[in-house]
Length: 200
Image 1: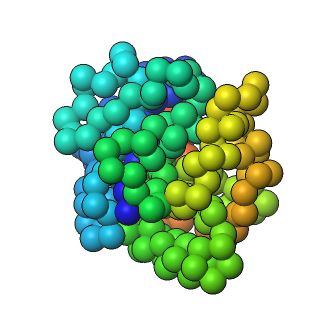
Image 2: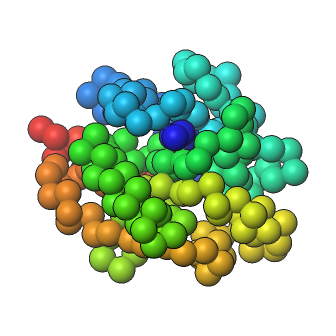
Image 3: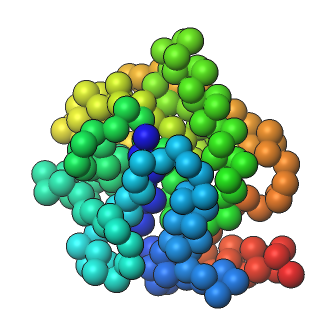
């Protein structure tokens, strides 16, 4: 079992690389690393980023997208994470701009994924906020790789394109009621200000 932190975006809306933004004197990526390391189900943890930022991370496993799929968005990062080293049977995917995700939330999702993958053959299990799936808070079974490669070789690199070809299952974020900000996505500086206010 492997985890990957997706940190390859250009953060244009945020104004600077979100991976290095700080909350409580800790960068987003470091906070996520500490959270993931506290969960004993992961054999390794990757940071998927772009070539411009790769040298800036202090982490054991930092990868950039496979050359043929560079600049194709988060699916390229997920595909690369599957291909790195010995291929895992499943992958937990989290975006670097969701720094407050908790051990409890990940463990709960893993239990649901393990059950539904085993009993129902589901390929992807993740959280959703209302009717909106959160593809970067999800477990992906290795069975998605052929479809993932097919999508990346097409003209549509969207998550929805992948979902149409595999079996998915989504659970509500309300299943983890505390803290209320655990799944917040930090896209703008004002989002970070709101999170800091909530933490005070």
